[in-house]
Length: 98
Image (cartoon, rainbow, N blue to C red; front, side):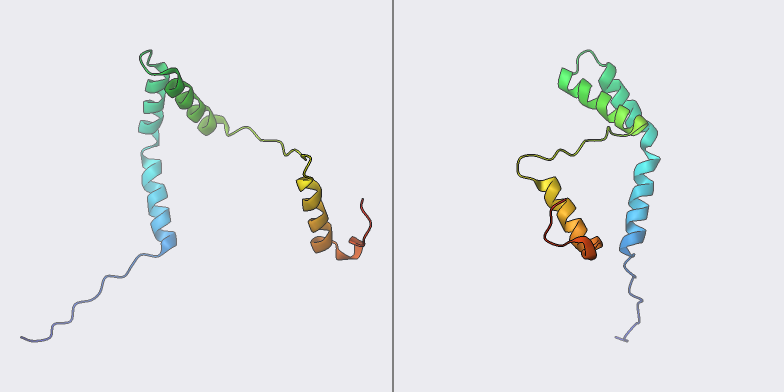
């Protein structure tokens, strides 16, 4: 039997694949929102399902609420600021605390 050359299918790039997936998902947006609205309005759905659907609708329509960063007792925020001073402004990173 003769050796027949068959071109090997090129694997799509990761970026192209992600773009295609994103596009496919976005093409179902109207249906997905309608399903969420249906769950939210369904009196037979559990309260948790209705709240979850309502939150999903609000998040997509208005964006998620920003979450404030708190500096707890462990001083995480102060540590982040100190690291920033050392990396971004090394001339001001001496031993002093500000």
